[in-house]
Image 1 (cartoon, rainbow, N blue to C red):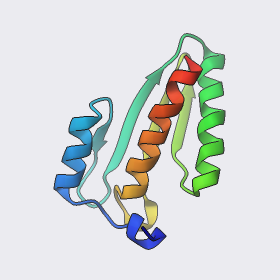
Image 2 (cartoon, one colour):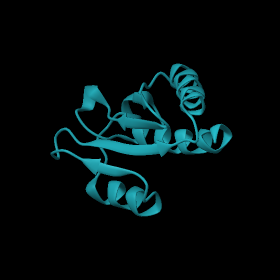
Image 3 (cartoon, rainbow, N blue to C red):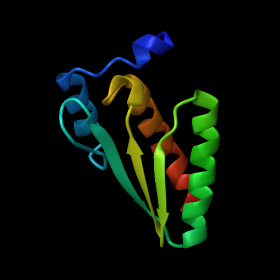
Length: 106
């Protein structure tokens, strides 16, 4: 899949299928401007920080960067494809990558 194809907005059906398979993720916003969000809890602040660093390293590799908010024992991830003004295949791929990284930082 080319980068331009990966940046196209998802169909409502594709987004619904993803959310059904990944119930920790929620979509919020308007159809033109949807974002995906997930809250990742941690046992400590430093564990959350380690997750943020790992997520940032992955984001650099795939050239798609989430908004990550580090708090006390929690990280909030927000994904959107700004150029497309909504959720694209790139966001779903990144959400799945973050979910794979998460257990390594608990």
